[in-house]
Image 1 (cartoon, helix red, strand yellow):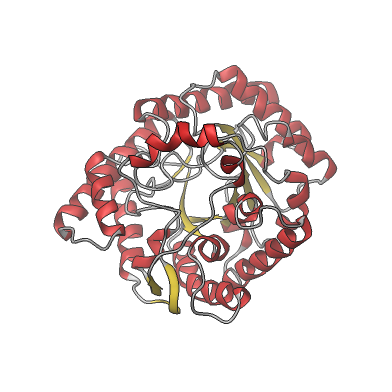
Image 2 (cartoon, one colour; image 1 turned 30 degrees about the horizontal axis):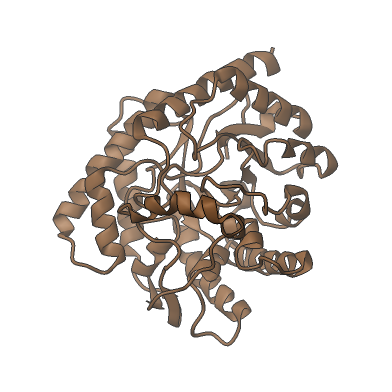
Length: 387
């Protein structure tokens, strides 16, 4: 995995805006409604070409395909893996239920055309990785589209869901215990993880379960119970990554990619020592939003392991404010000081911009302006940190 050897490298958390036509197709596929395969493939192609070009234009160093072929950051597995059906009833985040007036304010948004993450399929049978073709096509298409660009990224990554977020959001109606379910998911996902790395991409594992579940499925329960859950999920992830070099893996942990109070979020200090047990070479953490912008100090109390990098979220993907480059530079600089080495810090986004098709809260034109500001802020920080 590339370090910020001569300048602060820029990246993002994975998902980028999908075209309106692609959103509609993904929504139909998520409901198992018919979609013309040729039309879908062409729409994915055009949308991927657009987001690759826009990333390069914005100055992103470590980019990807924007997750255009996937309906969401985790429910895509229902099209690649066996054992899923029916519908989960996921609890609403505690910070939303605490404020009925806020929930009423947000209700009109739920009528948008989008893939539902709250009512995902559940495990109703044995979970296996049954269809490699979509994974293989996605990697091959991205490589082909990137090769057609006049310039490329410093490095490319490909995202994948963690066993823990699938187990937490695609509920278990088959296995005797949660531990057996998340272990079965780990064994299935091993195929995808190893393939992505074998294709030369950095693997990003999306793990909101390691923070967000504190105020979702563990709302009102003792912190110790949640931390036990975190440890079980990290053990499952390590099982899936057993054959993958840690320095080819980055792990994204967040508290939920939605604009809300977030006053029930677990503090980073409570989970950070547990995150260090993961067999990964980098952590991507939310550090831009108003609830977690102060937590760069955690790295003074709990130093980043010597073999890990930190991708600091310095852009908020839930607001249409375009962050000023000076603000971005300040966030990068204070994080680098806390870590103690700017070469081990990359600049990124708190989370994705369209984690499920149609769920994005930032207008597309503003997404690209935010990424341009990210580049400008990283350049400012580079001049100050590397002089």
